[in-house]
Length: 238
Length: 225
Image: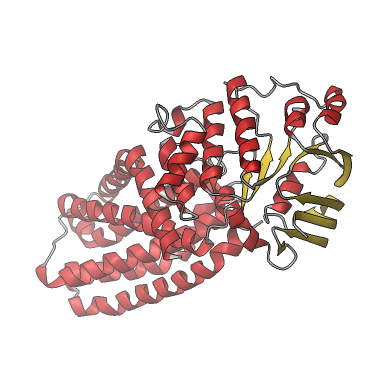
């Protein structure tokens, strides 16, 4: 059994509201799984459950071998989550932010430099204070922090949002590199054309439940014409 | 835990050094409070008598600003959530933020004490130096620990800006009383002897121990959902 994520009838609640209502999902090492579905369907909650941030109310859930029922805190240091916020400090430079997040897992200086280089931040932008960056550059910095943290499972919520075309291509290349280096990625996105082309598998989250849609990038294409699709250039904030 | 604490403290102090919020906003605010007290009391004898209390009152008001700021830098771009998601030891986060807050408070208190000497004609005496330094250290640690704990508590709540003073001020009353009495003894205000101050330092030490242990244990569950 080499499942990175295994959910069986997983139920999670926020207040009184069941955000996941019997979700079943298995993700294997090296996969890029795209979560699609309308707003409020439970995509972000699913990511937060896998990150150990949301408690499991019922059912079974293991992530990277850790049982989320009994010890959801232990999985956190091995998982990298990038949500709607970037988790950056506006008064620190790009390099200082990456160094800080790398230091939380004792990343070496060379690992931090490699993360900055991978996201194209090592040269001109390294010494720039984050508050002066564009939205896309902040997103790239947040991804560099994730790389520096050596996460085994990447949980990405709308990672393409705010990136320009070049930034999106860089991100896709980074994600493919990460999976070839052994990482596993679960990505929630409304940009189905771009994220679908990247994914090895597509699942749909609706009403807190999960439905398998496809096992390849091509078969996700027709879904991108739905009302939730925002097209590859949406979310541009720069 | 201590490695994480050092990392967080260094990060917070670097941010403060770069943003200069303490030097450009908090210190002038505290100085204005001291001047306003002098205007309101309008009597050299009264001001000189109550100088230690005014120093600590101004410190408490400034503490509220510092704590708000310490947690605003975490919540501005979801860094609190990111710290949790990264599995960073919450006890280390608590101690690190308290350490950074203590350094800022110490600078503030020294400036306030010197301004009390200038504005209120408070007398520093050699025999009270050890008591004064011990009081500053103990009260600073106590304020930093309780400020961090309640700052973390209020950070995730709607209306945190108004909730924090409501929660924090009653809890720090023992520090205000203890630090004021010990400072009076150190300065010899109203004929107080240095020996009268040490029991109050004991009270401050108990406060530090309680909130040091309690905060380290409680901070994790507090920042959880």
